[in-house]
Amino acid sequence: MRSDNVKKGVERAPHRSLFNALGMTEEELERPLIGVVCSYNEIVPGHMNLDKISEAVKKGVYLAGGVPVEVPAIAVCDGIAMNHTGMKYSLVTRELIADSTECLATAHQFDGLVMIPNCDKNVPGLLMAAARLNIPTIFVSGGPMLAGKKLNGKKTCLSSLFEAVGQYNAGTLDVAHLEEFEEKACPTCGSCSGMYTANSMNCLTEALGMGLRGNGTIPAVYSARIRLAKHAGMKIMELVEKNIKPRDIMTPAAFKNAMTVDMALGCSTNSMLHLPAIAHEAGVELNLEIANEISKYTPNLCHLAPAGSTFMEDLDDAGGVYAVMNELDSLGILDTTGITCTGKTIKENIAGCVNLDPEIIRPVDNPYMKTGGIAVLKGNIAPDSCVVKAAAVAPEMMTHTGPARVFDSEDDAIKAIRAGKIVKGDVVVIRYEGPKGGPGMREMLSPTSEIAGMGLDKDVALITDGRFSGATRGASIGHVSPEAAVGGPIALIEEGDMISIDIPNNKINVAVDDATLEARRAKWQPREPRITTGYLRRYAAQVTSANTGAVLQPNDK
Image 1 (cartoon, one colour):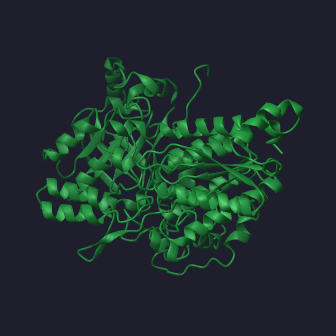
Image 2 (image 1 turned 135 degrees about the horizontal axis):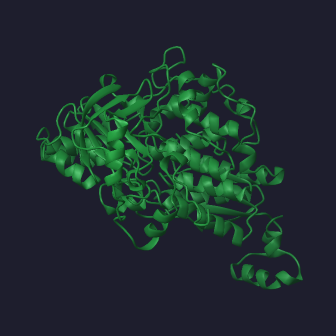
Image 3 (image 1 turned 90 degrees about the horizontal axis):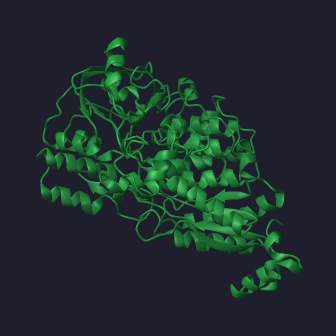
């Protein structure tokens, strides 16, 4: 066993004395040592129940003959961090989570790992750690929040509350109704109830083969979630025994499958940051160029919030991720031969997982869209690419031309939106919010929600080198690469320049000739990052472009 490095032999007598100090018995030291990486904390609603998940996992490990040892991982609530300096510290935690988990698991020589994430950067961070460490690992998330209680006959959610703020600022919603939204939007613990980033990544964990059936969809408050955690604890012992490792599971074919499922589910645009970053750690090159190719033959089968009015609990009732994969497999567009954390192939896993609700999961012959839910655009604004959640764009905004309204920070854009300075037809450009320029690549749910709340989501586009929340809808185009901070063309756009967006043809351009752009470039000067101390200073110095997953590059490269 790997853990023998800290348990066996005369030279390990001091080590064993420290295990004695932990209260471990001789019998326990003869068994595999399983790290239970739990992201529990009391500030993230999606993580407040993870102590229960951890206890269930540990019971499962004990039942299967292992010794579980709980260790921590950090997590940030993107909703609480939204629209202030705190959002600069969200994406950057992904690398901290991966690094700290690598340190813990290696220092203590765990034989296997059970990862317990739930929200946003916590999921990809732990997947990156799993790929990097490459010891037997399985995932079990905390599960999604139930949808908010009904308002005006419809269930609510966090994104509807952000849009309600926009309605209030526009004078179309009074304070009493805003307070009612506030009370009803988030009724339980769990990752927010729509197909936002957290739930996207937990679903894609299933698609990658790293989580058991239901990992992405079983609601946090259901007892089935506790049973799932016990099964994950038991299953890790099988993976240890068979020596099935993350890189055996997360192959090039698995990442292609994940992108295919991403297109079908209509996942968050943040998946286009995280999948390349996870692949990088697994030694797999995942070029975003393939996203559009996959989209061409992958139908969009789900319209969960914010794209539609259904929620994660509905997807779970309809059969979950496996039912979606079964639909896709009928087209022959998945590689179902790969091994998964179940010890079985994808084909074996999804057998018999039928679609139980053709309105929640559309059959492949009646999709919401014939192409996938994510589109990667290129043009003279974004030579290296940018990303949009096409499934959440109104049909009339799939192509759009309008004048640029240019802002050098999210804060300035918000002020203009709330002051009524943005009108129909405008293209809002927010720059210097990329990985380096922010630094930290803020999510911009507030500006998009304000625009939607004012009823302008079918008339106004937003382009940024920052990113968007999975709760964002509308023509919100992010991850513009290269970013403004390194002199990307988005830095050269001027107020009033005409911008054309063509999502069906994957194009985005500013109507300015090359000579004029070059003349502007000659005058451009780089800007000092807004935060120049602490972790963000180191992050800004090492982070790469969004199109490569915003991974960190050592300074010697």
